[in-house]
Image 1: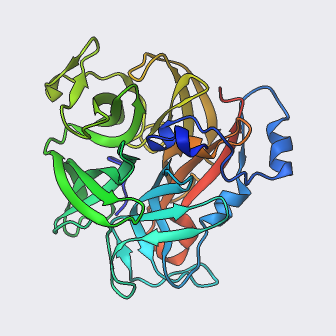
Image 2: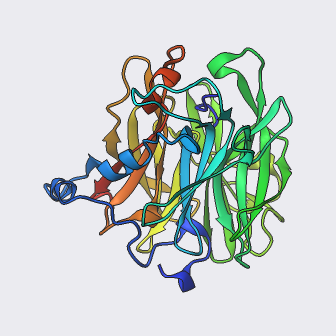
Length: 366
């Protein structure tokens, strides 16, 4: 269930968190955090007390833990969060959980007033993934956006084959799938195959600009991962896909070029104040999060700098797949989240706080 190797103005909004926000969203940053972030002209990251607590759930129904935790902005100003493996159950006061209600993906909708809405398939009593597969095939969502008509949401999914009795590492990438739901009612519409190739997982991130949606992928090799980029017209999602070969856009996916290494399976690409950025945790299983400047949606990527080292990474606990949430920027302070998990037997059942995202505010990251 653990996925490492793989994974405001309404009038100006088009494709989610890829756009620079035009007003403050969810300004949940304390004065103490602001003062700490202003203590130096160098990059500083401090824990976000609001978001850490916000995703510490104990409800008898709804999302109480998971990984992935990517997000983007919806047309109404709310945030759309994508989670991979997820728990839908009670967390008891001592933070242990029952051994039931585990599903392979879910969606959470949040707003600036504290709303927390969970979306999944099945029923309350017997939940299923929002994007449900047929065993042994399941889906882990990575990135998403809305269409130009603002009536559908498209999600790029990692297509995973679950290996029976494989434990934490019992899965393999077999391609990518597109999940579609309607907006604003969030009703499941369909899933369809994007690719059956396992060379690149195209669900890492997406970004929209100048009539194109850019999909960012991760190619996994032993002890490293590489950035790849493809694109398609915004008007026709996932049609006429072109791949960047280092010089031009071509139709042959096998000639997609490696553009940057040292990244994780899931990362972020975004634009803020007319400048492009790529943010990623180091690969593989490293605790350090970095950010790069980018000259364009396909790089080159320069000025690599450290923004944070996750303190949770010790013992059996691992952190991975950091993501930026630029739609939640407050006064140039960037919100960055990362996933946690444990390699110890049953530890994420014994302590729900080992399987949830944690967040930091980052200043001077530009």
